[in-house]
Image (tube, rainbow, N blue to C red):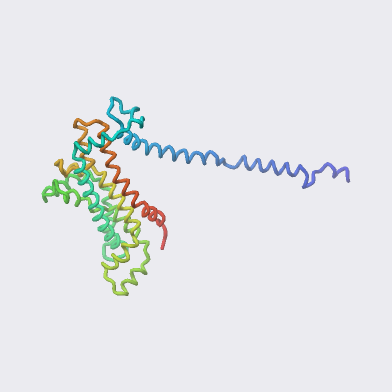
Length: 302
């Protein structure tokens, strides 16, 4: 019996370890590889970031590059950077007037759109009245209508009212923003009904409920919408081009487009474009904290 059992590997011998090691190697071979996946995602993100930032970086480099026959690759020589292009643009064109027009157009639109959208969103989310759903979805259906299809009716209406070459004619048609109303409604729907019921029991009016309960609780979404609406209006081109027919009423986007027809170098055009980006970066930097809060609270139920 000793001879028969001597050749059998015991559970603690190397034979068992060999089988266990072979099983581990088999499982590792069958397990899907994670190394390439971990490398692929960062690489993809880097490529996307490069494609996104590259045009902006080239614009800034060309804006600071001196006048020369070749814009690229001469603009990559940062040792030759100069502010002459910015001085010429600010001194020879109406860019300050255009910047003022863009600021008025964007800031006033942001204030009124946030006011109207928050009121409408509160009504659609927490009020009960006949035809509420039909009215909301009919209003939301306007998102499917392209702005180009309503451009001529808008212009005819504003022209008949005497709004051509005026600030109110440029601003008023953009105030009915269905996307802003939709986002406000979805955010306010997450607020607990007990807050509004308690306020009504205490005798608070609708205006006091709106100003003391709704507005403080929707600051994150208001900041997010404020950034988006500001960027939409600051970069808007078609409607200001149509309604503002005189040079004094041009916005920055329209004014910079007119520089291409004048005796202006590409360096000066890029300098003007760089100036237009600065307010967008400032607005985003100031409201970045609220943007983070809005993203963090999205989808949370109270």
